[in-house]
Amino acid sequence: MKNKLIKIRIAEPIFMVLFASLLFSCDSDFDVISPEGGDGPPVITSVSEAREDVAVTQGVLENTYIIRGENFSTLKAIYFNGVQASVNLALTTDNLTFATVPESAPYVGQSNELVLENLSGSTSYDFSLLTIDDFTEATIDGVKTVTLLGGDFSETSSVTFVSGTEEDGNLVENEAEILSVSETEVTVAVPDGVEQAFIYLETSRGAVTQSDSYGFSYSIYIDALNPDWEMSQWGGTFDLENTSPALGQFSIKSTREAWSGLSFLAPNIPFDDYEALTFSIYGTGDAGDSVNLAINDFAAQVNLVLIPNQWNKFVVPLSSFYPNGGAPATITRLDFQEASGTGKAQYIFYVDDFGLL
Picture 1 (cartoon, one colour):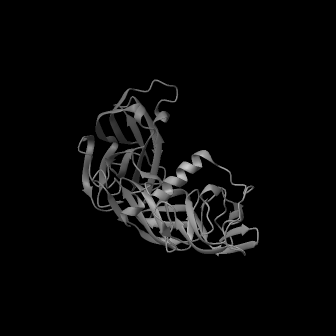
Picture 2 (cartoon, one colour):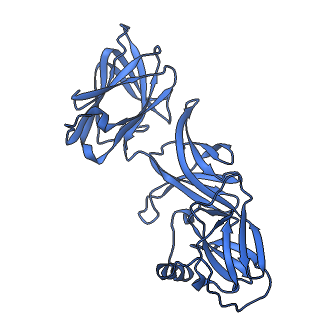
Picture 3 (cartoon, helix red, strand yellow):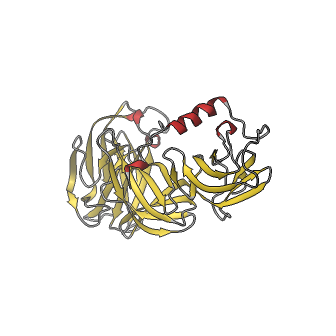
């Protein structure tokens, strides 16, 4: 993906005029028209994304587009898949107009038509719509995946995980392997080493849309322990560079005696800065085996039941430790304690993708 996807420029003169005009005029009813221009129905020659004036044949909900053609001076209405668009007549000439795709415009199972109407008739233009509504996470055969939900994804060409910015000098772009594509879903393998990123989806029609933030607000362990944290334990051993099973390059292998534990010693993390702990655990025992997750040297804990021989992803709200109040100012320690209670001499579980949201 080129940097243009994340480095948005709105200083182009034509777009600044649009923005200023929108501040002072929001009329989209086409009630007052001064017809000076060509006769006949509208003719559409191109549609461009307004921020960079790049021609596209697919639009993103709530984005603004430049429509070029003929006979626009007597425009009456503009529609995206049957929903009337907001248009500013002050910026309309006989050969150019701007339109913003309505948030309510449908984008799945549609005719994919941009329709312009003027006093002499109407014309349609092949133009589909795109948006990401949400995403879900899963682990498939040991591979971390994300499924983007929305549409119209039929002509997806690339999906890229982007973190940092070019301005800050920390821009990182990781293109993902696309596993499956349908009109409403795209599933990709999460690139190794991604902690936090925005997910950009690009189509062969030239459209680009962006997801909400993926990943952690704060990483504790992804392939390596956060250098600000330390490890401890009792009644067992651990390996920070276990290679299988692992969701990336490495996971933590925890070999435990009954009721023993693995400790993560924190650098005084402000409790109120975060909402939840998230992590994945791979259990190797029996159905019903469990692990206790404790906070601040067992000041509070929750029990986690594991499904054996697969990665179990957990998102534990911090509020669940203190449902009746009394939460601490800081997080100083987190423990994973073996809690199956079945009397075995040894239990093994793996921890990966551990962090705070």
